[in-house]
Image 1 (cartoon, rainbow, N blue to C red):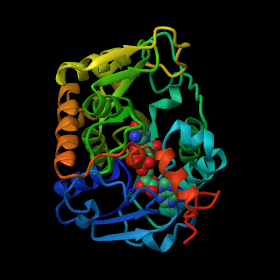
Image 2 (spheres, rainbow, N blue to C red; image 1 turned 45 degrees about the vertical axis):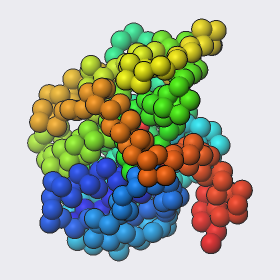
Image 3 (tube, helix red, strand yellow; image 1 turned 90 degrees about the vertical axis):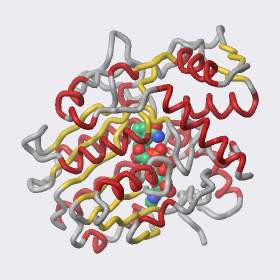
Length: 348
Ligand SMILES: NC(=O)c1ccc[n+]([C@@H]2O[C@H](COP(=O)([O-])OP(=O)(O)OC[C@H]3O[C@@H](n4cnc5c(N)ncnc54)[C@H](O)[C@@H]3O)[C@@H](O)[C@H]2O)c1
């Protein structure tokens, strides 16, 4: 099996690639990434890319269709991936996350790729009151990032690709340890700040809901999507990926972290304006259709792995620096240093 993984050099990608290598030791694994966050390694170990057969550097907006020759499956992770980046780089979020994704999917169908997996997001539900959101419930995108995910899903659903099984995994908010850790994610941020400052500052009043999924379980969901055939869910499928009992309130996340790191103080902003991003998600469809690939990491295990990984990094003098772990700050550093253009492309 030959699998192309785009965006493999971010937070989720290294965990996905390691999982695929473990699951299919003889697979040919190819990575395609611009490398915007290549330097953001938090693990003292070797480069995660060493287990690929090939790493290709490039921009998804210039994707060479020749890379798809002989490819059986595409795992498409490459994206400008979060809400603040979408505010700062709105047009680029559209061209990278939507237009380039669609072009790659169309080229994949043309090249005879059998399976296309798109990393979508539960953020498309936005502020959602009245219980957990199901796949067919109304969407409420609040950001350019969420709009780009919806536009891509809709375009993929209309793609003329009768021989390609397309799966859009609407992932819950990611959490957990990765060799390229991100701290602009709620649980990761809480663990890192509790360890480094002894305090968790909850910016909201703590009541908003966030569904979580550990990166390890995202990799297992991708494995499932790779092996899915059209009889199981249809030729095109958009599905919530997570677990019903992993819908948490932000204050519960802070308390769970504080329990693991003795002495941690929690400050809740009781006067905060209501957080517009609050939603619970219904993952029943995923549990019915992918019973053997349900999330297995508990909140407690995700926190333990984060604590262990961050402690190991510190002991190896690879202290995790906030500016190296927040996606928007990294892109702005590249831009201020003249390394990337206003269009988010490498200059040299
Ligand atoms: N992290 C989450 O909470 C979460 C939740 C749901 C869905 N997702 C989706 O999963 C995927 C992976 O997320 P992540 O957290 O690893 O993001 P990330 O920002 O850590 O990694 C994204 C990768 O895409 C690459 N990339 C960005 N623009 C590119 C371009 N123009 N050309 C080529 N490569 C480019 C980056 O270099 C990076 O390696 C994304 O599509 C994201 O939207 C993430």
